Length: 69
Image: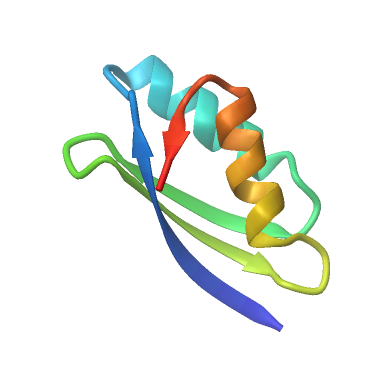
């Protein structure tokens, strides 16, 4: 089933941060779309919950060096 979730992402300071997170998430099987909002410190991710979990999404963001809430 396709789901959309919003994740608070702390520590983003530039377009490079935006690009790093977006590219990494889009590389995951089951992720269809990623919108990153630097000013609002959040990401909106559309994904197939049968292929990838929220825990996998947040873990990937953390491995890239950012905090999630």
